Image (cartoon, rainbow, N blue to C red; front, side, top):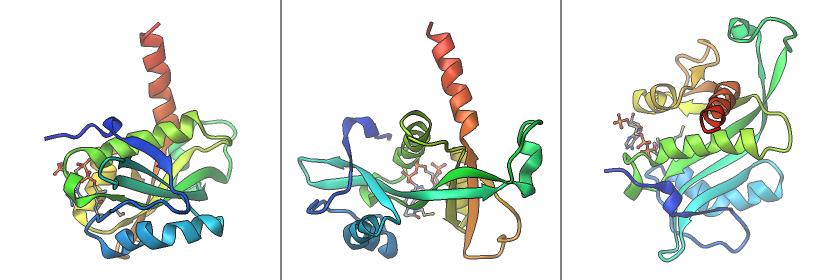
Length: 183
Ligand SMILES: CC(C)(COP(=O)(O)OP(=O)(O)OC[C@H]1O[C@@H](n2cnc3c(N)ncnc32)[C@H](O)[C@@H]1OP(=O)(O)O)[C@@H](O)C(=O)NCCC(=O)NCCS
């Protein structure tokens, strides 16, 4: 069964918002319910979420912060010509789907939405999405096989989390191809 995320509303999390949420990971659930607003106040992370207003329930959320990626470990993935040592990025610092909605394509639709968000409505240049993914096969598969992320390096192969990146140029090229196709 699949759920259409776009049947739900989307907003930035604000002071006073009260929505139920449980993604099965106590730290991430706690973050959304109690820590996201202090992070926003301290200017270290902004949280956005899809929600069902009638049930006062959050469907899925993500928290993002500015980031940069050092390119020396993957120069061959970048075009010839002028290359920078660092590229601008946005880090998906927290991400979760309500338990009730997991395994129904919501997380993958969220990833598509985040790609679109930072290519289409971003106020600054942003070339990569990054994430410190839990080092568990099902989570790594979610980011790599389902959503096109790659490991930044092999140095963290045995750590609790692995840094992964997605090159937004791939997505913006796809969008341009779509708009040509629709002319
Ligand atoms: C990981 C997570 C965001 C995936 O969202 P989702 O809506 O379940 O993902 P989708 O339905 O788009 O894709 C499902 C794929 O994700 C992976 N997956 C990881 N955790 C899963 C879970 N609890 N349930 C179902 N699929 C999960 C599987 O590879 C699955 O592949 P399959 O469909 O071939 O079996 C979500 O399960 C979640 O919020 N988990 C708890 C919080 C968490 O671990 N966040 C990531 C921190 S790095």
